[in-house]
Amino acid sequence: MKNIIVGQSGGPTAVINSSVAGVYKKAKELGVKKVYGMVHGIEGFLKENIIDLDEYLDNEENFELLKRTPSAFLGSCRYKLPVVEGNEEIYEKIFELLDKYEIDTLFYIGGNDSMDTIKMLSDYAKDHNKHQLFMGVPKTIDNDLGITDHCPGYGSACKYIATSLKEIIRDNSSFGVEKPTICIVEIMGRHAGWLTAAASLCKDNDCEGVDAIYLPEVPFDLDKFLNKVKTLAKKKSSVVIAISEGIQTKDGKFVCELNDDDKKVDAFGHKQLSGSASTLANIVAKETGLKTRAIEFSTLQRAATHLASLTDINEAQMVGEKAVEEANNGKTGMMVILVRNDSEEYSCTTDIYDIHNIANVEKKIPLEWIDEKNNYMKDEYIKYAKPLIQGELLPIFKDGVVTHLVRK
Ligand code: F6P
Image (tube, helix red, strand yellow):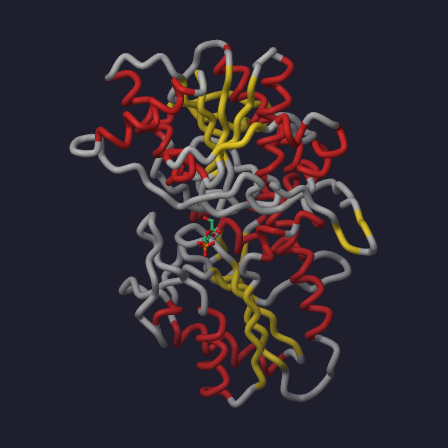
């Protein structure tokens, strides 16, 4: 490989920059001359907005800081490449820029929508005799990419969710009053409940855990929900319920649309779903007269690098390195996957898989991992997720506040 370019796309994670670190490290080990970064993904690349990563990562200190920096260091985008027919100039522009900078491999770090970019570009290259290679690097807090055991970014978001819920439960149970506070916590994940399931991970000897978990995989029934809240409120002085932002009634209406069905749609065609917890908290307050509180973890759950999982950081770097290694072997149109080893102690290795079977496909939680009757997760889920949240990497503090690596 001569020169390469790496881009980040879609919602960031706490460890998406560790994958950039992995791409950079392996590329330099293999003697790649220039490692470019797209600023704001393929959208920025089309405007020739690129940087030379040597300007930032040529010293160990910055490399370590990058791994402790949340959000997309390179800048992200939610841009879907259009179909080739009638849009050839967009594709030709991309290949013209790749030729101009003598880039022979493009790496894209993203989720299932972003993997579509790798699919489209690798297909175009094949159909038009272009020599460039295209590799996908998985990331998403949503954990909904197919084939891979899990997605880098997920473990760290789970760690934040479990830790913060434990703190919320402590707080909410401070007052032993007759009428409890009903605290509804909204967790990201549009159609798959992987993230919300992580609410089950806070239960331990020192924590009773959340009282119920509502996932998008199971149709939401408002009457049943209200009955559950009323029953819990009779028995407990604190009720904490975790819900997914994407819970929907059986006729397909998002709960956050019960009050406001004019939700904005992003460039990938997804509705912005926040507001489910406050919608439900208002309904509960109205129906029961109980004190309610709505908490939205929102971007905090994907930006909390100070609480990232070391396992996740290491795996995010590992998938970046693997993508470069495989491209160096001439592979294209593939995404790196994590494969869980069949051993007592948790470990994962990496492999690659055809992007056509991954792009645009959403992996849901297996229904047999959900205890629908009790609105909780079964042990199978906990066994799957616990290893992913292990280990910590301390942030680097300056004047009492964490420091990050930022683009000039
Ligand atoms: O795809 C990752 C994700 O964090 C989803 O869980 C969430 O629904 C969405 O992005 C939020 O998107 P935005 O950051 O554009 O509001």
